[in-house]
Image (cartoon, rainbow, N blue to C red; front, side):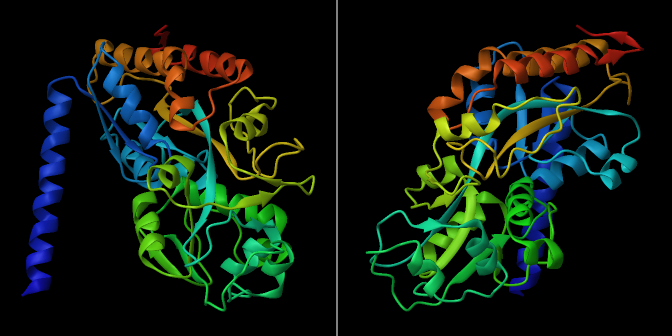
Length: 346
């Protein structure tokens, strides 16, 4: 009976969500879905934007990509560029517009330990591979001298849904641990060798907070909002870097290709934080589809233009790194390539 009741509630919730999105489409509210990584920033941005109403659903990058593929939203948002398979499933070319960059932090719940731990990329990958299983393992003690680490089993927490945050995290692990690269690799959803799954950054944060011995990964804003400790991660220069705005900005200050698809994990910058990424708004290059009006297409492009200009003022207060001048210039060029009936919208 409980299962049936839960199923009915899920169906009702899904129907309500669909009705909300349908109503939004009718009243010209712009619809977006995707990344939980950028959700705190988007919530603030869209509450301050006055030219259009925006309904953004924080369902994970994989969900946002699927919604864009099905053309049920005006824009998706992903913390990873579309891969070849995702691109092939799109019915038309898709533009990637960088919105901001942010840090993925490694958070943990170790009773009695309040210090910020130092973790190397290799050790972090070995924890997620199930090779390092206790908090007082020799590898962890070696980088945390003077910290009284308990003999407590490590409980690995990861995302259960298709996630850009997972892509950033596994992209980093792939670069710093050959065993991880060989056995698991990088993707928005991987076959995790160990641990428990939580849905969204909220789910991972919740599991870590309620599970002694847990370790997980979330966006920096989620860790700070929930007052969760997070580790200093060793970068390519051998320095243990605290995930803060300045260190994320240094990681993201790179040459931006014309399509804006660039990985900034494992940065070469000696002061940069190594688990960082851009997040991208995804829209169809040609905006005349599904009987969309030119007005709706124009409203969408103007929203994203505002995001990469005036909207950047909200990044730092919410622990995101504002776009560099190079990233803004690249984003402008991409947005200017959006068309309606083959003619530039901007």
